[in-house]
Each structure stands twice: as C-alpha cells, then as structure tokens.
Length: 231
Image (cartoon, rainbow, N blue to C red; front, side):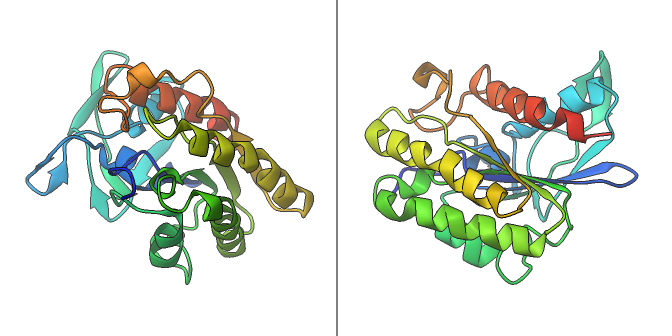
C-alpha cells in the first residue's frame, strides 16, 4: 500500500487586493495526522507558518480553497489575526489522482487563476509506483502551466520518509532536471528543495511533519522561495 496521507501539496497564490493562496494537497494542507473537528481538520499544516511570515513582513496574502483546515486565529506580531482556512487538501492523494481530479480540465487547483503555485507531490507514489512518478510529475507540471501560462510554478522535492528512502532519493534526484527542462521550454517553473536538511526526527509518525518543527520548517522554505514575488 502507499504511505498514509502525506505532505504532498500545491499552494497557489494569486495577485490582487490580497495574494490569494489556495492549497491543493494531501496531508500537509489538511494538517494530518490530526483528526477532524466539526468536519474541519484542526491543524493548518505548513500554511500557518507561510501565512504568519508573510503577514509579519507586511505582505498581502490570504488562503482559499473548497476545504477548510486550521485555527480561527493566529498570532502576528502579538495580535490575533483571522486565519483563512481555505485549502484543497486531499489526504492520501497520488500524483496522477491530483492531476486528473484537481488540475486537468480547469478543476479546483486552477480555478482561482493563481499567480504562484507551490507543488510538493509524490510521497504517496513511493511505495507502489515510484518508477512512474517522474513522468507523472512532468505531466502535472505541463497541465498546470497550460492552465496557468502566466503563473510561476514552484516545484519542490518531497520531504523524507522514515522508510523507503531509496525511492524518495531517486525520485527527488529527477525533479531538478524536469524543472529545468520546463524552464528551458519557456515555462515559468522553478525548483525548491524541501528534502534538504529536513530531519526524519521531525516526522511525527515517520511520514507526516510534526507541529513543533516539521511543518514550520516547510513553511519557512516555501516562504523564502516566494517572498520576492509577494507584495
């Protein structure tokens, strides 16, 4: 079986009165492994760190999506700020399902016409279909760039697992080349390394990031990559 729902995500940002951020994901956007409360996952995954860092720096940003996850408020400079819970988090999703169910055909991942898309996907492919994962990643990037030709697609390596690291490392080694190929073809695509310096000890169950260090680490890496593009 594929690993339990894992930190595979798209986060999309659109310029406007506020930067609209739509998280299309497996576990990190939904905040797993935390349980639901009132139909809503209670942890925001890495989105809280991303949001707080942006707001602290005076950036205009909000989070959108048909799914809801996270607290009512977060602290920004000591003050309570309403946390936008919107996301497109779908626990356990694979690259192919993310593509066919939420990207291709102008589905939920691209409906907001985002200016920036953050893509971390592939963990749930590692145990059963790792060899096909690079081609599937290439395809979903193509579908995103076709739907959002003027947007920046930020593609990351996947974070480590406590098992199956050989498959993870093989897959991750292919991602920079895929991204470079797209960029050389004129697509607006860049690579970000979420695997680098991510300790397995920051996984709460060997699969999902923990709240104290893992999720904030992911948020920090995303924010460092996109800060210059936010207003």
